[in-house]
Image (cartoon, rainbow, N blue to C red; front, side, top):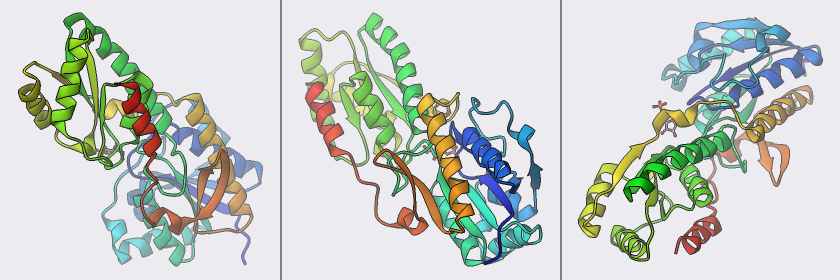
Length: 322
Ligand code: F6P
């Protein structure tokens, strides 16, 4: 097997806090081990176009604490086509680049798998706030997004108390309820609506009424964006309870900000592990946090089944918000 002495790294899909820390780890550890490291700008779109630039130690200076991704990101339709995949692989092969680190979600992993079939060693690092990648306990960016939600809700709680109001707060996560569930448990939400669990809005309304009757001066309901249309939920709850509620959609603030210590360490350790597996000559692997250890697993695991739902957290949140 040819020795790999040139590698590239790219970010793909929705950006996530901690991606820069992962990029930094890949570049610095790669250089430490005498690899030539290249950065691919604008995700697979840039790879296909050949926007590939050499990285040195200074390229990743002063980024560890910054949200977003210095390599930029994009969602590439062309990468779904065989022609696009071949163009992407050729851009790497023409430069003698033998391995590619892809920092992104499972959609980005699918592109990586196509490149593996074309002879490029690929390693996936789970970078998405959604925490929806099968095979890893946590994804880079998730902890920061949860903390962003908690900080936002602490501000909402002040005004909710002043006006003795109910607030519905929509959070991101695509079809995964993990951000809503963790943040809801952390702040003691009255109800948490997530796509994984059927809910009855009448029961949610009755719980709100019980709360106010026993003197609650505000209520917070966290709604995962995949759990339904929050304006519809708001209208129906007003009908069931007879009192007003306010809606806050947190949106893209959840995608930014300095990564938490947890995400910064997760990103650095995953980036470092990616270089380890490249030096071992592995390909088609994903770096995962598994039972508090950073390990590598076959990439195809990310495409199998659904992420296990932590039902015990949901049940506990319900018990504690009685
Ligand atoms: O995948 C990350 C994410 O923030 C999802 O939670 C959200 O649904 C989606 O991206 C938004 O996509 P965009 O940034 O393209 O609007």
